[in-house]
Image 1 (cartoon, chains in turn green, blue):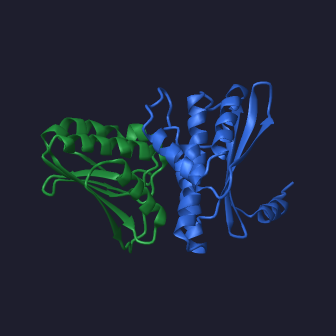
Image 2: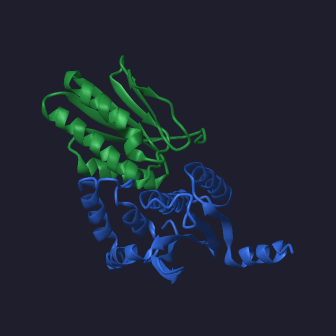
Image 3: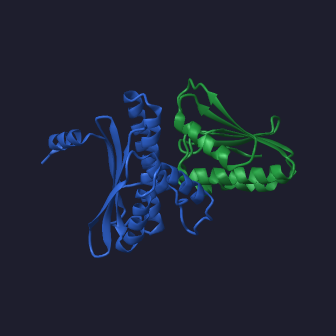
Length: 128
Length: 180
């Protein structure tokens, strides 16, 4: 079971079994990105080989540069698993009107070969 | 003597919105950054500007904190830094200054000079390259912070080194941001 709560500077990370979704939500500029993402890497290493279907849903309005490095590593792991036959897709949410968030999503989509959908959302609530 | 009025007038002249002077902890970085962002949200409607100022602030302060930790400077006399966010006529700047070892200066200068010669397309390319670079042992960052700031900056990064003592310089880095 993978479920980490969000903090002000790190996103929540949760696996939702019924929808086969791995959901990351919240801003990402933790004190040490490599340490913060380590549990996610361990989980992926253990679970990916037996998962046939996974949707990565990313709702991260801002990530610092070391988080982008970790995110690319996650996407690379997923792409590797997709290459061996799993149905893996990415759904990347960004706030409508936030060009920087869109550009970030676009750059990731250019860098990995996975079905990659960039979806605008209207945000009514403020970030915590 | 209390020189608060003179200090306040000086802050106003320089357009200082927020500043922190002292040892950067992760929670200080969070608190000051969140306050700055909230304040900009009440003043400025351009989301790109707010995102870029916040992002540059995070890279600046985390670079300083990572440097302090990597060089074992925590709790020493060289642990105290300063960060400022200023706004003058719609142009924002995020400035940070911290003590660095003189022996680190040449490599840092070389890196900054190289970055200053690159245009936005080159910087994007370099960022993608660095994203794929193998991690450096004992480094807390991914070597992306300066490139990220250069990408978000309006115009070249400006920096200086001032002599502190026989072994340390004070390194200042100013990044201008328009959000354009």
